[in-house]
Amino acid sequence: MAERLAQTTVEQLAEWDKQYFLHPTTSPKAHVEQGPKLIFSDGDGIYVNDVNGNEYIDGISMLWNVNLGHGQQELAEAAKEQMAKLAFSSSFVSYSNEPAIRLAEKLASLAPGDLNAVFYTSGGSESNDTAFKLARFYWRMKGKPEKTKIIALERSYHGVTIAAQTATNVPAFHQFSGSKIPGIFHARPHRVDCERGEAHEHGCGCIRDLIEREGADTIAAVILEPVQGSGGVYIPPDGYLEAVRQLCDEHNILMIADEVICGFGRTGKMFGVENWGVVPDLMTIAKGITSGYAQLGGVLIRQHIRDALVQYEDVLAHGFTYSGHPTACAVGLKNIEILERDNLIDHVRKMEQELKKGFRYLEDRHSIVTKTRAIGLLAGFELYADRDSETPFDPSVKAGLTFVEECFKRKLILRALRANEGYNIIAVSPPLTISEEEMEEMIHIMDDALQAFKKNL
Ligand code: PMP
Image (cartoon, rainbow, N blue to C red):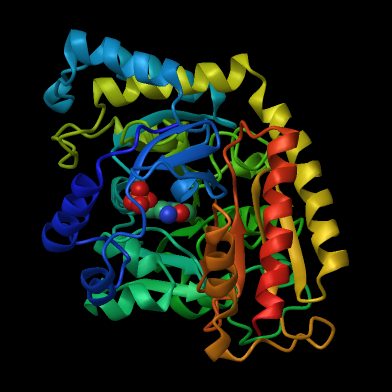
């Protein structure tokens, strides 16, 4: 439990926060008026504490990243040990370091198929921008410089750097800056028969349509999240990823899987694509690789792309100061070691069953709960005024946000997603280390919060 800070200190911190700290995806006006919602101080497993000594359950692993839970001492030790030895060294101009090399070898052994090389970044957005550049560069190396366009899916989230943000299809992120790069298009997701070319009706807006409209000769890659996260926790129907893979092969287009959320055990497999036996050409990773204990991301690259890239004699003019950061890589290695040592991926599949049991309990008790879904511990459900007729709540109810607030009052942190204007999708993704008892505790708080939500309607 956190040591409580003196009240004057907490007030001072809140004041400085309002004055000096511009927060991401936060209403600046509301923040300046109300100050920080919580000032976190420490944590243990699925629990986090604030500076006032309140304990919360982290039901969403913060930003889908704290997969091994809070206060994991071995990760802290790995960082400390590496920092004390060599906190940072450059990976530019052929300099290297041991943790980055060892992690690259480990990733090659873990990743499906022949995804055997990695380009390191410091997060998900950088990874997706890098993947787009690598895809374009690859086609240039192959003598097809006109293959530059990218197809992404509606409801996708790929980050906020300008290219990744253009691929992101959550409208609020475009309203912010109005800037987009040209040549990125969005298709309607999860139309298995369309992508397979069966019962294909022209104009359905699927990936196949966009390829036909734009011309395969102009398209570098298709990017998709194996399971869409921020866009609303959408699990694709069986056959979809396989069909997209086939479609890409058919048209000589690279397939990029954004595994930023799905990677490193979240879906009950090491990588999300393994649920469907698909090997993408490029795979972007971040978040769970270090459980958030250090900033690290990367793009995994298949052998044929790597082989084409290594023909290039000039400098590969791309790289971040923190590409191959020794401390971040040491944490990544330890994170993977713990995932494997503690059989956490098996544990995730067991906890998926517990979570689904919990969801059924909530559905039985609350007729407003529906469309529950979980793959591993990537899960969610929706709130409807009438689930049978799928009548949404009036937007003024702000159903998701209000429910999440009821959970918050009961010391459970969850997140409402703005997949449609109602914010009615609730994301549930606790740390992978959650126990059966902790899962029950979380479900009971949701039960209580639903009760209160209905009472206040
Ligand atoms: N891709 C996906 C699927 C994500 O969920 C996110 C972050 N939520 C990103 C990319 C962007 O990652 P980052 O915030 O580390 O840049």
